[in-house]
Amino acid sequence: MDAAAPLPPLSLYVHFPWCVRKCPYCDFNSHALRAELPEGRYIEALLTDLAREQLHARDRPVLSIFLGGGTPSLFSPSAMARLLEGCARMLRLADALEVTLEANPGTIERGRFADYRAAGITRVSLGAQSFSDAQLQRLGRIHAADDTRRAAEELHAAGLANFNLDLMYGLPGQDEDAACADVQAALSLAPAHISHYQLTLEPGTLFAAHPPEALPDTDRGAELQHACQQRLAQAGFAQYEVSAYARPGARCRHNLNYWEFGDYLGIGAGAHGKRTLAAGSAPTLSGLRIERTAKWREPRRYLAAVEGALETVAELRSVTADELPFEYLMNALRLREGFAPAQFEARTGLPRQVIADGWQSLQRRGLLEVADGHWRASERGFDLLNGLLAEFLPAPARTLPKPGTARVGSGQAPLA
Image (cartoon, helix red, strand yellow):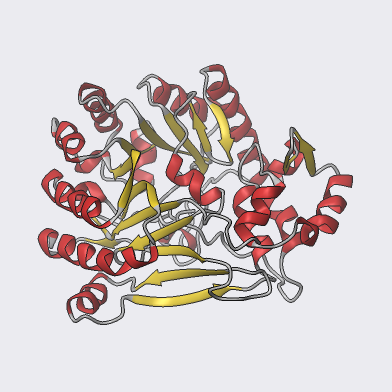
């Protein structure tokens, strides 16, 4: 890679680790709130954390900020305003900055979205999950379907029409009519974006230990997904990523930066980050050094580290040249349009030839294709993404790891 080549785009992820109650399917870094929310103390810690992280920004423009969790909407609009004012002081923010707030319908009071907008929020991701009250109870959610409807009304009234609805399918006992009814209910609220993903049993969760009854099997889950995709397409929502559907112009720029292997600073308890060091400053086989970071997960330990001027990074790992092809493709192939090979070279520092043999083998099997100058998964390959990605794992690897981006919500926060 040419030493003069630009570094990847940069985003900021901010993690808020508290929830009113931990959902039984959730494997994100979230902790049930058992005492008074330490709002002021945590915002101060985030700003201290950011003061350290800004050194890695190198005056690059920050194109998006994602406030994820946990439940960030437990924090007041004034707290968010204080945080975003600090971001503006310490970072070079892009002119058309996208600032997304994750919100739980059960933690929003009527009228507060106008205050969040005034604080600097430009986009909201609302955790609807389902419009069946019975299913919401099975999922351990603290809100009812009417709470989501009221929250959507308030979003429109506040001028925050650019909002996402998280929606699950493959719920216990769910048939095609019920899954499509959830999609139709979501569409009736006129969101700009819908994240539609299957309920999965993640290791370490309550559902993994005690699975709910009557979960659809893999084939049935695929049938539900395809039926819902048709409804979304008919309503003008284009699928641009595995779980992401948007109206024209409403793609989530923050998550696109993850999937295009951009960089992101991560602050807050359990936040992940990715940074690229300029060629020549840290020579590796690829000509770049790409690092992944993770902050202390437990909120008390994170706060103690920040306030004690101790190291907040619990894990710092350099991605090896052998790992880079898989790490890049694990993200980029989630996109319907795939990627330009020149971007692969720019973001990894590797020549495209390192993936050519595996690519050609899968292309002959009809799983990958080249179209309009982009390399991408075929229609069939998109449904078999995990399996085909295994072809690009480093030789010693035996199993496909869980995607390591945020979130790919990352996680970090969900794909919202």
